[in-house]
Every structure is written in C-alpha cells, then in structure tokens.
Amino acid sequence: MIKKKDRYAPVPHSRQDDEKLFANPQFKKAWDALEEEYAALSELFQARKEAGLTQEQVAQIMGTTKSAISRLESSIRSDSHSPSFSTLRKYAHACGKKLLIKMV
Image (cartoon, rainbow, N blue to C red; front, top):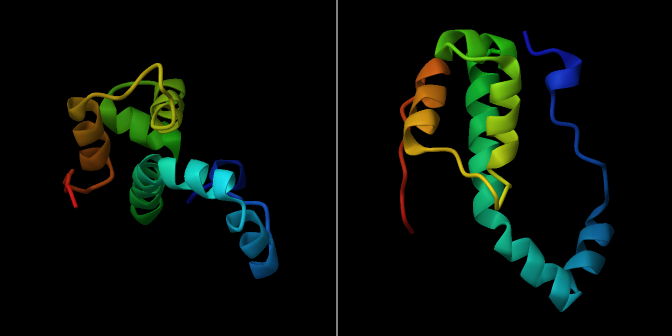
C-alpha cells in the first residue's frame, strides 16, 4: 500500500487557471520543454503505483536504499545527473515492468 507521504499531490487548479497560464507564450514554451521529463517521471510513478510498492520496497528489490530511489525519481528532472539505462531497467523490473523507450 502506498503511504500518503509517498503520493503525488498536485495543487488543484481550474480550467480557467490553465487557460490563463497557457496564454502566456513564455509559460507555454517552458511547459513544452519539460514534457519529456514529466512524461518519464509519470511513468516511473505509475509503474510503482501499479505494483503497489513504496520507494523502500523498490529499493529492497533493487538492492539499494530508499534515498537512492528518491534521488532516482527526482533525477529525471535534473540537468546535473541522469539515471543510466541500466538503473531505469532495474527500476522497471522491480515494479514488474519492462523498460521500453520510443522515439516519436
């Protein structure tokens, strides 16, 4: 079971909020630039959620620490460190998934 502290909890906002934000060309450009990172991060969270695992449980399966999993999940958005293909594959396998990369 996923603990409340491990859940992603976005700030609620309305459709009008979205329309106002996306009307700003600078915001839209910045948003579009983040699409790939957020898509990858979403896939990691979804895989862990579907497996019903906490970060600690994924860490145990991978033979690492909870803090390493936390860093992995946050590193998707980091310009200074990107996880290796091998690490992403291990994470996917720990969640009962297969890593698949597609270019579209």
